[in-house]
Image 1 (spheres, rainbow, N blue to C red):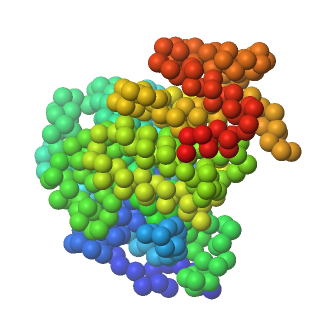
Image 2 (image 1 turned 120 degrees about the vertical axis):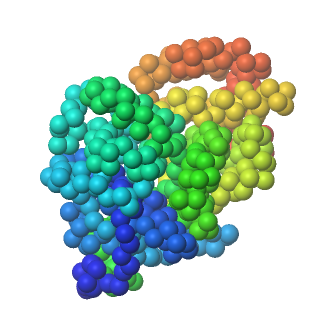
Length: 478
């Protein structure tokens, strides 16, 4: 079997136009694929230079293959199974700035490089005051980026036309604003001056983004079959679902320079990414949080099993389409399409998502993902959303512990929450359990017993689950 590189495989070569901080599975399965698709459909003609953001990473493996790798997309599209493999050829090379700092900083001198894209994990966008301007490199990502920006400012003598368009893809809300804040902190810490600060503010744009694609990563269970299909010994194959979404909070002139939305891709340039962030958290993460305990206590183990079950599937769709969707303010047809895509993702036959993994820290998840929708639904409809309340009852019941069949139920959460549930269930009174959970201000930041009718409905659900089982409780509301 052939080694994969630009000698053994036919591949395009594009001019350096993008610096990418991060070389991991997500960026290669998402951003680099989007660049590849955009190159094929428009005159974008962009190559990527990877920068390894930490000292140990994958740059050497990527360089051994001249930046080439295959992406295996799997999932359901319009009811049909998809299992495609493509060779992605947009990465020109990778740089380890800890070993090749001069090569890294020299990227700032290339006038053709216009974009900086990153995914350095949620912890990557952080200010580290121990970083110094003369470090080679600064340890934090914002520190490295500030070094690069300052070198470009000096090299091009403050030319306003030589700024960067910066898209952070870290999974934190308002990631662009957080990154910009860190850069300002380094400008002040390193005394880089008002002129540089003015250049950064006027020449560069740092834009908030939201990214969404499930990327399981290296397909170790099927790599043998994949290598047979492609005919190459590709050591950095990456696997992902077919669904993708990139929301970029940026003006039209940025969209013209980065025309991914013109390539038939689910890339949106919008005035605010906040409603899309809310949509994802509400319609994807919200259902996950409540379907997991309800499904598990009904004898199911994966998200796919829950959605395909005749009863639990109806429960999931009720929560999504009749309850949570009604709490959002985007156009209804757009929300329904997104929710339908989420259902397709949930039943992806290639992704095995165990509900017990979702139930880690369920109470904080319910607070951020489902409680806002519960309140808005009550305000708008004048009644409580039965599915969300049953989901909370499922979480509370799961945290009771005990067994499901022969399997021990072991909740995993903050020790104070575990202790509270243990003590409440020891009373044997579901009304006290409901009141006690809702009164736990250290969980909710408020006393939820004040939410009209919530304690009564929650106690009723708990009683049905205890006496008749979870499926009986589900049947009551579907």
